[in-house]
Each structure stands twice: as C-alpha cells, then as structure tokens.
Amino acid sequence: MPSQPTHEALRAEILRAVHERGIGKTVCPSEVARTLAGPDEKVWRLLMQPIRRAAVSLVEEGRVVIKRKGRPVAPADLKGIYRLSLPGEP
Image (cartoon, rainbow, N blue to C red; front, side, top):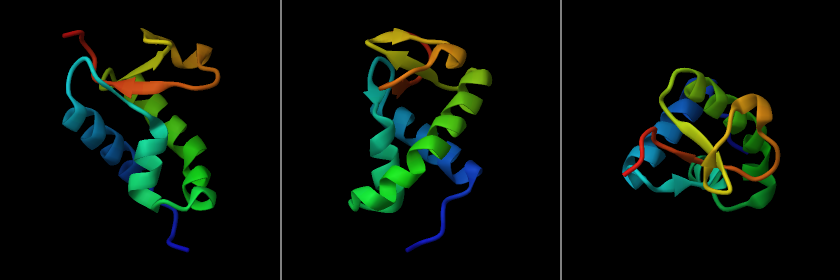
C-alpha cells in the first residue's frame, strides 16, 4: 500500500480539484481521496479524515468553502456529508 499523502499534498489536491471544477461547482471529498489513493475503497476511505482536516485548514485561510446541502457551513458545525468549492458564487 502506498504511504499516506502529507497534509500539504492533501491541501494541494483539494485546491487543484476545486479550481479545475470552477466557481459555482463542488467537489466531493471522496473524489480527492480516489485521485490520491486509487479506486480501492478500503484504501481511499483511510484518507477521508485527513482530507477533512486539510479542508478545514483551507477554509480557515479563506481558500475553499465547505458546503452541506448546497449551503456554506462553518467547520465547527460540520457533520456528515459535505462538498468543497471555491469561495464566491457565480
């Protein structure tokens, strides 16, 4: 099994994914995990909590937005399924 990506590698992949998708579109964190770890669910699922931590750090810097049910949500209020997007609306 490949080694776990660093926090910086996770942040970089999140930013790459949201920029590629563009303003007004969202990215599922599992897409980021699968890009880094491949299609084996047992492997990419191990990245979900580290990706959440990386996403929260990017939110705190104002570089991404965490959305739940299409609405921005504060990291402290984050529960369950979420998506990531660039700040700003189309």
